[in-house]
Amino acid sequence: MSESTVQIALVLPDLLGTYGDFGNAVVLDKRMKWRGISSEIVTVNFGEPVPETCDIYVVGGGEDTAQTLAVRHLREHPGLQRAVTRGATVLGVCAGIQIFGESFTRADEITHPGLGLIDSTSHAGGSRAIGEVLAKPAHGLFDGVLTGFENHQGRTVLGPAARPLAHVTVGTGNDGKNEGAVQGKIVCTYLHGPVLPRNPALADMLIEWATGRKVEPLELPAVTQMRAERLKAAGQRAEV
Image 1: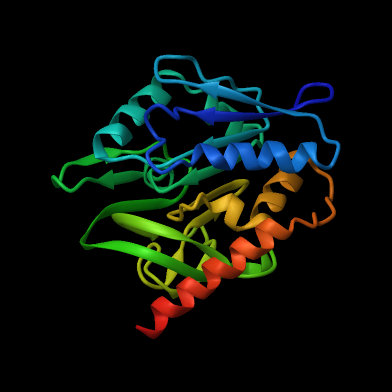
Image 2: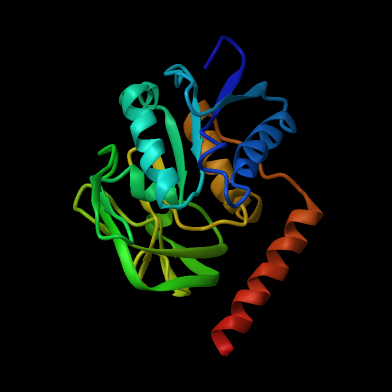
């Protein structure tokens, strides 16, 4: 964090931006500004160095080829890894949960090394998981229900150093039981929507981790209405 501004690195949105996950960076920025916290988004595109001095790093979703290119880029420009070492907060969505792990095996059955930031491995599953997800946050991380939209074939197995973000009640997530991963200040999830507009408590948890300060809830009727609609949609899926 600079003297007075929280920097949010939006990492490789030109590669990992298939599902509008750049919206997660926008939500973090807005929720801080609405509270009077100075913040800015730093966009890092393919071919550009990744700064190691930002406070929050946001990585989105993408297909197999994009994931492979992203890992190569992040190995060549290890600012994200250095930031994790010094305790930065990180959100990885869909492709993020796979490339942050030890390895990921693509649909073509080729295994690629990941960045080793979380204790996990991922592989292509037998069927594609598509639809609304409901999950109960694990370990009391935040209040409420985790909700989002999944569209992936990946299956992720967590090792002992990582813990699940939530436990699935509707949908697939990592494996039909657990959803996402948490290790240190890294949070990973398969959920789009994007995930932070749909889960303000999760967004605020990341803000608190990055700033080291407790934030008060925001009263945003549009967000409350959207969450109610999405929870209803997921509930209807469960009844089918």
